[in-house]
Every structure is written in structure tokens, then in C-alpha cells.
Amino acid sequence: MVRERVIAMKQWRLLGLFVMSVWVLSGCGAVFDPFAMGSNVEESLPDYTWQEAYETADYGADEAGQEVVVSGFAEVESKQYSQTLDELRTLIQSYDGKVTSQDASHTFDEYTHQKLRWTHFSVRIPSDQVETLLTDIQEKYALRRFAVNSYDVGDELATDEKRLAEIAARMAEIDGALASEDVSSLEKSTLREEQQDLELEQRSLVQNIEELRKDVADAQIDVSVFEVLRYTDESASLGHQFQRAFSGFFSFAIPTLALSLVSLFFVIPYIIVAVVTYLLVRKLLRWVKRKEGD
Image 1 (spheres, rainbow, N blue to C red):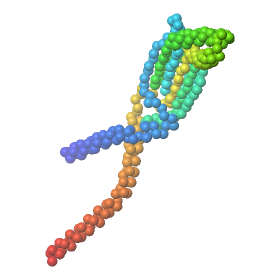
Image 2: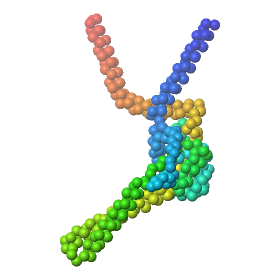
Image 3: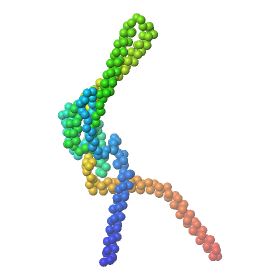
Image 4: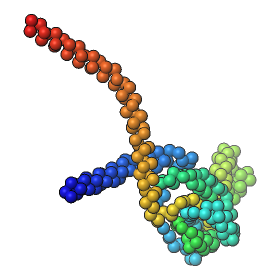
């Protein structure tokens, strides 16, 4: 009976050592896991973490002189990737949005190493529709990150328009001076150089004002869709955890074993020399002992 208890205790100890070994090796394997480091990813992705950041903004010109530029992004996770892409495109179009650019690639699931797709597209949408669209996306889909931001460009527009008025007034003065016969040729040459500089500044200001007004009218929104086997806020299954542990272990053990074999190949000559030296010294000692006996 006592012997059986001792055997049972040894078995439980061996099981405990095995579990601890797997746990430790899984940690080591994660460090050396080539998939976890993203070595096989076609296009590197940022290290996304769950973060829901919603900033309330004043959309439009609620106060006098206020012109607001709106921006935002939504990163969607989906287990029905193609269906979600089609739904989002339809949803964006329903809010008068237009996809201006699109980029697609793939990554790997960190547990199963299965190839997963992702698509990112930029959207232009009327600013007064941004809050409704992104709130709609937030309510319908699982999100990694989400945010809406805005900033007032009213002061910048007012400054640029004031400067344009000053340039127009100065250019009118220059035109009058160039038409006058009382102005010398040297002065006219100086005035023409100033006129050219003012025209360049005028074109730059006009372009900046047009871009700001375009941004005020139509917001730039980034929408990304990531194919997933499990959502970010879901815990991994026990099977996935063991799969990752053994995968990480073998990704570490195999290179280590190969390196050890290569190292052994270089050590073999030294071992041979050591063995031959030992045999020679042993033979010499026996010969000396025999001589002393004689």
C-alpha cells in the first residue's frame, strides 16, 4: 500500500514537472516564434490594441467664424470578412461617402498561424454625416479602435482671406505706379519683382483656402476591416493556447538542435585529439610502471 502511494506521488510530480516545462517553454517559444515577430507578414501592421476613443466634436459652424475640419477612423474586426466588406461599402454609400483609395494584404493569427486578410480604405464623406456613420459602425461591429476628431480652422481662413485682401490692394497700387510716367525704370523693375512675389503668395493662399474649405465640407475617414478567428476582447481557447505553446517550443527547439549539431561537428576533431592523447598517456604510464617493476 505504501509502495503504491509512493508511485502515485512520483507520477503526480512527473505530471507537474511536465506541465511546468510546457508552460516555461511556451514562453521561450513565444520570444523566438517567427510568426509572432511578423517575419511572414506581407505588409507590416501596427501593433493594434483594444482602445475605444470617442471624442465629441462640434460638426459644422455652430459659432460665428467657426469652420470645423472633421476626421476619424474605425478599425473593424470580423469573422465574416467578405460579407462585412460589402456591408461597409453599402453603408458608406448610404451616407453619401466615396472610397478614394484602398489597400489590402494579409497577416497571420498569432495562435493558429492561419493566414487572415485585412483591407483599409480612405473615405470622403460630408462632414455632417461623419458622426452618424461612425456611430452606426460602432453599434453594428466589433471594433479594435475608434475615434472622431475635429479642429477649428476659422482663424486660419480669416487670416488667409485678410492677407489676400492686403495683396489685392498692394497689387492695385503697383499697377497704378507701373502705369505712371513719373516712376523711373529702376523703380518699375523693383515693383515688377514685388508683383511677382505677391502673385506667388496669392496663388498659395488661394490654394490653401480651397483645400481648407474642401476639408470643412467633406471629412476624411479611414476604415479598416480585419479578418479574425476570435475578437480581441475574447479569450483564447485552451486548445489554441497549447497549440501556440508547442508551436513556439518547436520553432525554438529545432533551430537550437540544428545549431547544436553544427557545433558538435566542429568539436569532434578536438574530442578525437583528446581521446588519442588520453590513450597515449595511459600507455606511457603503463610502460613506465612496467619498467619500474623490472
